[in-house]
Length: 459
Image 1 (cartoon, rainbow, N blue to C red):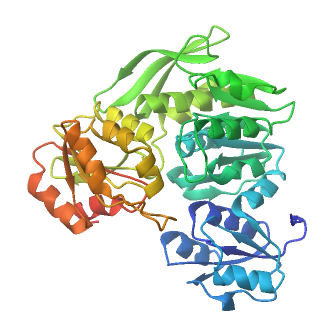
Image 2: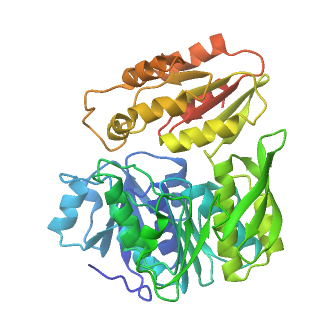
């Protein structure tokens, strides 16, 4: 693999520069003195921000974008065989690498690279860790898969030994990383267009944990089934968190306030007990916060600093994000696109004041929808009313013979109301006709379903 010399900046071209992760890496290199350019399919807030920083962005796929002065190219996972820019890169013998390979090389430049992994919760937990490190004045470099208000975007370039990133398991990309500290939040079935089954996924996470050096640290959710199977053979230190008192960090006395925000007493293996209050809803966020506290404790950050940062943490964009009100009807947006995430979000919503709960869900990818059809139906049935948009295909072109109508039928079999509409306009009109006093609407999914709530609010 081509190795970048970070002491000798060169010209690097990003195919898919507008992606949330790709754009962050592009900015890190730009601030390190590299000449950075790239392309994306369409203009966005992210590409406009890159251009404002002096990075050249082309729109569309064109071999003319690839010039002889490019020293190396970085490809997003969406780039497939037949891509005109990829072919031009090969024709010119320009070395290239994946986004994950570049991220791994960047991590090696830091004494304390931190990688946050798990089937879900990565963005929120990475954001919590980022806020704690910021509050402790550690001046970290942060790349997160969402927009975090405290850093004004998805990237922060610091000047310390700390580097914090999400570590995604899809296509085993996190196996290209070089962490000193890793977090494993959960391990469940997902991305079955790549992995064979849950055992295949568990093997991948075990391999990821094995990347840690002997003087490293693994923070792992003790609620993962047979979690010690994932830590077998590790020589680094291991800290667990979870529901049970056998874990190094565990909660008791869990309560919710009038806004659905959670509080609990946190216990440690050293016999300590302290109170934690969050401004984000859901029990799942309590466990995300425990992972962040365990990391902060290990780094020697004062407990007072950690708790203070978490008490003011309001989440990142599209994670139970309050978008506004339509009269007295609250409109929330959430990125949940896996059955476990959906169940966690809808369970959290029950603690938020409302009359009826409407979930407007856009399934994400045909393979995920088909693999978890029954699980999606069960999770969505936690809402009073379910409104389905068509499946967002993302990278997929084969619809596998399914549509959201199949999911609608499954939900109805469970005795729940479920509606399907082929357009966002139809969904908006239906909601306007049926929402009543003090209802709550959650737009949910990893695609562009957020537009429905924004349109309702006139945004």
